[in-house]
Length: 388
Image 1: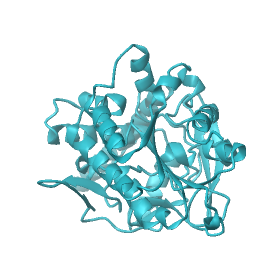
Image 2: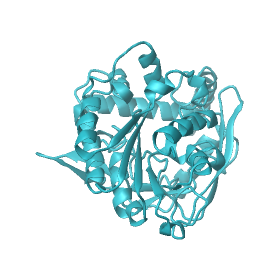
Image 3: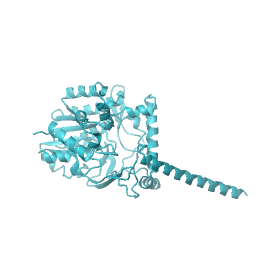
Image 4: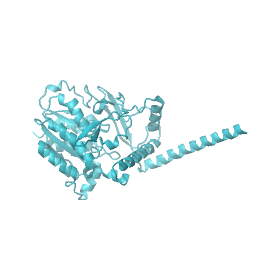
């Protein structure tokens, strides 16, 4: 009798579990198709992760970087089942997204160095479509691109310049500031958002800022190694590759992460944390930390031509087109002060990009720059920086 009860109990438990999994997946399918989640990706039904992360590692002092001489694929499908992009990436002998040997190009005197995140790396587009390549094809300059995806921010801009980029001859340095996330990418408030990852965070001290790394972080040859446990890694690959449930799980993780951050910063709710981004950010600590390391980078390049290019996102441009003014915000005043002190040319893309429709600049179901957006920015930079 007891054995029968126990057996029935476990059978009922298994049935409930199966029902929950099916309900969760059905909910995730509808939520993804309606674009109501933070992530609405369509699975590509393969264990081969075509997500453009296989060519990344996290073993350098600056964290995320590309494996040397490596090729990768990136497929993204929108919630309406249309293919947004299906591209390949490749890195050169120093890990940059480029076709050139940077050691051979090191003898050139007119090298320009680009430093930025995925927007400058060329996320989701072919190499020939990147504004970096378009500029090279239309000028006599040679561009060394030290930009990468992988939650790359100002502390990492400083570290990659000091430990890699500055070793190459150059007369220009162009730092691209993606306002959407650059204040927060290295914020100490996010140190628990990426458990185990080897990446720097900005910690405020009594009178300054310093770089710290999580205690549990490990240098990794594989950016996609979620855990030392192979079964766990395979489970994650199955979820991402074969289910819509991965979208709901990632969205819930983001919500709880934002709520945690809101509590730490004495902010009332996670909605305000979302607002604290882009051209209308107002978190003084994160802004000061970001610009501390940007200023530190440019202090060491006094003899170079120096540029900061500000990249807005879709939300920024919507607000700007509603006549919302950002030039009196703390971050903009801080940047103005630094640029004047260090003779940095600031190129704000917003006043020009606001004249275009957002779908002319960005992908339709991804916040990154589309091929046409790269063309537009290449033309702007051609006139502002590389005009003969």
